[in-house]
Amino acid sequence: MTMKRLAIYCGSATPADPRYIELAREVGTTLAQRGIGVVYGGGKAGLMGAIASAALQAGGEVIGVIPQALVDMEVANRDCTRLEVVDTMHQRKQAFTDLSDGFVTLPGGVGTMDELWEAISWSQLGYHAKPVGLLNALGYFDGLVAFNRHMADTGFIRDAHRDIMIVGDTIEGLLGSMAEYQPIKPIVQMRAEDL
Image (cartoon, rainbow, N blue to C red; front, top):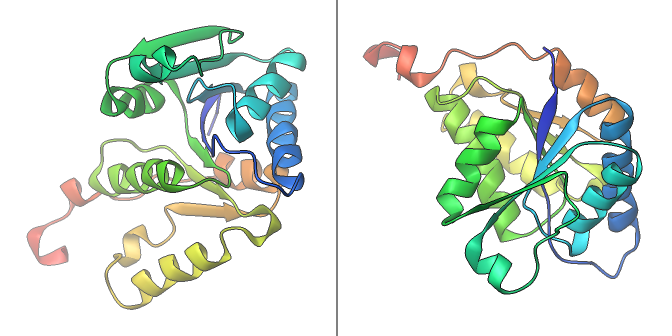
């Protein structure tokens, strides 16, 4: 699967542990070096800002998508290759899907989790057929990975959808796995008795 642009989901916070910002910068640099554009939340703070600045410094394309309310708070990164201002968070997430060939989630909080689960849910339903990657660096998502497995083991995630979330602990390994992704059979293509 060719990935020209990836939507990057991550926190706008700057944790005390500097390894998280270093991770974000590594991801931005790696994507730019591979010729993969970054589509992200358009902010200049935290991991979001670190990814964008690293990708731009490495000569990469960076498209920020940000709601007007956050622009009004003066948190928009105006150094992006392109900054798209939208009215709502729903429009923002739709733009991430429309502009990208896949999704990569890095450490973050509630907003990051919302974006990850929506990308997975939309894949299950057939609203997109793109790879959804989770960068489990520093063991940050160990509990989430275990919980996802628990949902599948108990039958709340169908066997056909068990592997939508592609997990890797390095950006290079994750990109390799995402490039090999084969779209799943979505719910809209299943028979009622398969559900």
